[in-house]
Amino acid sequence: MNIAGAASLRSAKLKQAAMGGLESGLPLWLQAVVFLLVLIILASRQPDAIFHAQFVAEDGKVWYPDAYNLGWWHALFLPFSGIFQTVPRIGASFAQLVPLSVAPLVLTIFQFILLALPVNFLLSRRSSAWGSLGFRACLAAAYLALPDCTEIAYGSNCAQWPMALGAILLVVAAVPQDYVARTCEFIYLLLAGLTGPICIAILPVAATMAWKRREPWRWLQCAVLAACGIAHMCALFFLDPGGRPKFPLGASPMLLMRILSGDIFLGALVGRNGLGAMTSTGGIIFLFCIAFTCVALIVACAVKSEAPMKYFLLFTVLLLTISLTRPTVFPPRGMTVWQMMMEVSDIRYWVIPSLAFLWATIWTVRGGIPIAKAVSILFLCAASIGAAYTWVHPAMTDLHFADSVRSFEAAPPGTVVVIPINPEGWKMRLVKHDGH
Image (cartoon, rainbow, N blue to C red):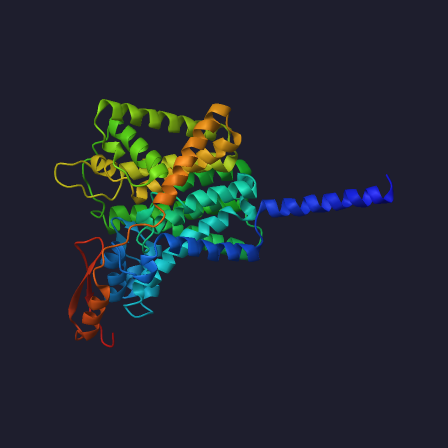
């Protein structure tokens, strides 16, 4: 080989190596750019959460008033509904550092950060086993455009769901190599594990990874998740034994089919809908066909996909099982838990299962058989239309939070101030402190 040919070959190899490095993940500076871009995307989907921030659900009913009335340190260790919710309580603690008028915005930004981190985890070099960087970018785009995710978009009351997604991505990723990365991951897994019982669904995946890979770090991941699971069990059985609601589940194969097809699969395609409640013969046949087709697609993906996708789908099945057996749901008299959940397609319990369906669909377009590719392309076209149609989440009811803040500021110390919050009918109670 002549000198020119050798130089050309060497140049080609260097270019290929450079492309391979880029394909494995984004460099740190580009990760920072992506993080900021994701925050902008999240804000574009719920602009009223930025420009008209209000307290929502447990943010205003539990986390913030507990931190204000009881002190942030004491509130940090309180269980709620039989489990620990450490991350939302940390967010409420940070919100104590700013005036009440700004506190809801702080909690919104806090949740945006939690929602953005899984994108960075997915696009990092440690997640290269999922596939090419372009493939993982498609997975990230599906996550950001998911139609049925309204409930996790406001405040930090649903922090456990993005934390759980981030935790499973870290567990199936390559082991971190430097001390800083390991310290950050340890803290993240600990906080995720102490924020809801989802760590119980991640633990079997972590244990399987540790058994197969025999890497010491993976055993540490298992230990952290197991310790968090034990903490939740202690909270449930000793600290707050009556905290979990106990209503009849009303489980049945028909309701399961309706939940899978109407709430999870069609919810991932078109967003909030009431299709799962159809009672006509044609409607039931349609729901069954949707459920059968989508489950078959997911099973095929689970059999043929790369290991991280297999583990993610396993985690999703475990998570859905926990969600359906021990949800925090308060059905009205005469209605069972599953009946109520079936009629609400846009809730936190369906976010990760819907995402798993979309990710399996994206994988099938890349690696499935021709007929499955065709079906998956149709699904993704429908999901694109659904994402565009539902891009901006519905604004919360304007409860004139600014007026409530002025009433609170004018109240004398020791006064119990009641502030209306979303959803309508919920209230926040604060005992006015000296100097606040």
